[in-house]
Every structure is written in C-alpha cells, then in structure tokens.
Image (cartoon, rainbow, N blue to C red; front, side, top):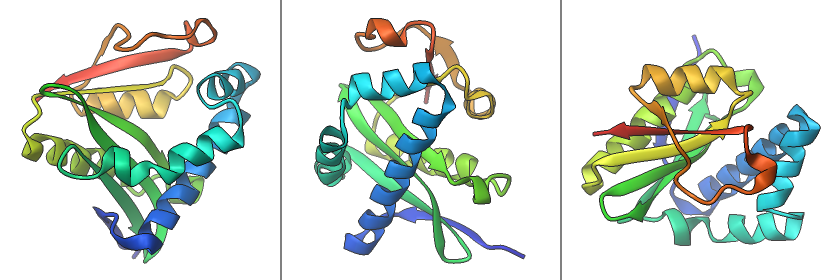
Length: 171
C-alpha cells in the first residue's frame, strides 16, 4: 500500500522538488490548450520570468505570511502547493499540483487541507484561489472543501477572461 505524506517543505532539497513540480505544472497548463498556453505566457512571458518567481518562492511563501507544502508518495515528491497573505486577513492558495502518476491517492485534497490549516493557524479568515475552468477535477475538489465561486480578486488580463475562475472560502 502506498504511503502519502504532506509536509512543510524545508531545506534546499525540498525546495528543489517543489520548484521541479512547479515547472511540471507550468508545462501541464501550457499543454492543455492554446488559450491556456497564452494565459501562462501572459503572467510569465518566458522561462526567465518563471525562473525568477521560482527563485523567490521562500521569499513570497515563507512563514509567517505563507507556507509551502510538499506531497510525497512512498518518499517520492509528487505534489506541491503554497499559500501567502494578499491582504489583511486574506490568504491565497497557489500552484496546487499533483503529478499524473499520483492522482487518485488524495494528494490534492491533503495538500489543500494542510494549506487551509496553515492559513487558519496564521490568523487569516478568508482563503482565495484561482484555477482554470477546464480543470474540472480541481474545481470539484475546491467546491467539496467549501470554496464557492466569486469574481476576480485581481486584475484579469483580457486573454484570461472566461478561462480562469475564482474561489473563496471563509474560515
């Protein structure tokens, strides 16, 4: 029986795993459709821009304002997710991703539950996130965790209109 563990990413080895997972996520989104590729490239126009973001993960998502979680299946990194504060009392969950080989083991749910617990423990009262409308399994997961759809909580580039949906959960 496979053993799933979700834990706080600590140390350079964990962060390297998280960065690799984030690159896999970027590649996954770009392959969904031409529109999805355009949206990814609207936010991060090239690999250098995304690489800069990956280099700053701990700066953006470090405690006390955020967290970075790593999911492992039988000791192998298979998923990640992170959170950070975006306004007083409000945090955002970002880049929840589980490799295809690990889907169906509950890693996405476990990552989200751990991130929500981190957010709650930090004192935030509201959690926001966005996702692609085409990611129906992710949307079902968020809704099953008590998130409800809402309008955009940041300025949406025209290329993303009708493609990205937004969610909120009150803790």
